[in-house]
Length: 256
Image (cartoon, rainbow, N blue to C red):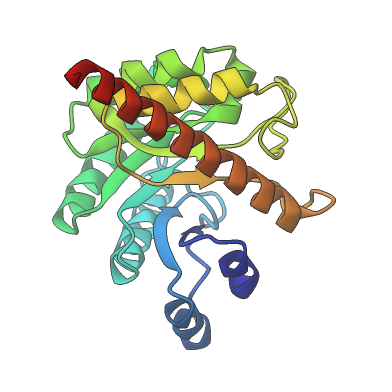
C-alpha cells in the first residue's frame, strides 16, 4: 500500500496508532520518502475506554492511549494528532472530555504537536460550529479543530464559512465527498461537492493563512480506491495551482 500511495504522487500520509509499527514498514516509508503528517488517536481505543467516560479508570485508559499515540507521532515527526468526540452530549461528559483534552494538549505541546478535535455528526460535537465553541471554551492554546469537508456537508454548514470562523484554531483539514446524508468518503466531486464549493474552501484556507497538510480521506471500499485517490489528488492540486495563479495575477495587476 505504501508503494501504491507513493506512486500516486503523495508525499504525506495520515496514519492510525497501529500502523507503521514494524521496522520493515518504517524503513519502507523512509525509503519512499513518505512522511506522516497526522495521526488519528481515536482508532484502536481500548474496549470500553473513552476520554469522557464517567468511570475514572476507563477515562484514564483512554488518556493513556492517546498519550502513547502522541509519543508515537513524535517518533514519526508528525505534526498533528486528533481525536473524535464521544456520544454523550451531556454537560458532565463534555466537561470530562475537556479535562482529558487539556491534559493531553499540554503533553502534545511539549512534543511540538497540535492536538485537534474532529467535528463528527452523531457525536456530542456534531457540527464544526459546536466543536469550535467547545474548543474556545476549553481555552487551551494547543487545542484545535480538524475540519472535514464531508462532515460539513452532512451537518449542512457552509464549508468556507466554517474555515473562516475557525481561523487560527484550524489544526488540520480533511477533504472527502458524500451525498450530504451519509459519511461515504467518496472521491471529490462524486457527491454533492461542487467545483465552486471546493474553490471556496481553498480560498478560505488561503485567507486564514493555513499552511498545514490537505488530507484526502477516502473509503478504501470504493470500487477503485487507488483511482479515486489519484483523481482527487489531481483535482485538489489543480485547484490549488489555479488559485495561486489567479492570486499572483491579481497581485501583479495591483502593482501595475
